Length: 277
Image 1 (cartoon, helix red, strand yellow):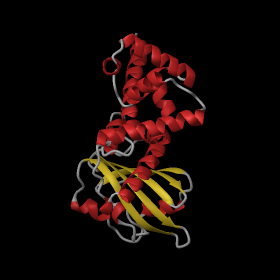
Image 2 (spheres, helix red, strand yellow):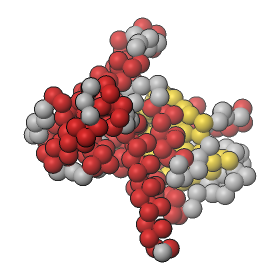
Image 3 (tube, helix red, strand yellow):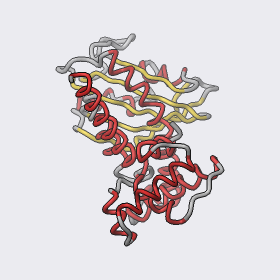
């Protein structure tokens, strides 16, 4: 009985994880991206704050030449913590995270304990345990920084292992979000981004979805696309059925047809396929 209960609990956790993942995928390029990522991670690994930044590296000088904070979610930083935050430390190339960013060639997980000291001084790096997920493409690095209060326990090996596994999904989405952020900033003077968030969210999701279909050489009917996009955007079967003026059973049928063509199983499989997992 206990084994059956545990199996059911794991299925519930997975179902919740993929639901949150669907919301994250649909919010790439949107202001809700960071809060959705925080909600997804925090459901499995407690974190008080999450930050997303893009670092520009000059390999010829072995230096970080620019750091752009793309957003954050969770608690606000204290003044002490802001002073040593890596996103404010592009000229502090002695900072451990800066050093690792300069060394990274692919994807990397970096764990900084709150009690770690700077090698050149005795100042604490901050008032939190930190775990950073990093990916690099050309001279740009995307950094997802996760914080946990120093008064709480540090990240366990099991949690770090799970975050490393999750990074295979989060980092590609982060790279897309950073690219969308650059494009949006280039179009809007001064970096401001006034827009219809709902329309942008749908456009971004549709573009990503069509790119995945083309890459996989799969053709879906218009209705099948509508159902898949609705589910990826976090909609429920009844909500999508009402919007398309069809029965719930019809939505399930369209999903089964789409899943068969994509070689996946159900809504969860669709979310994993969308992010290339």
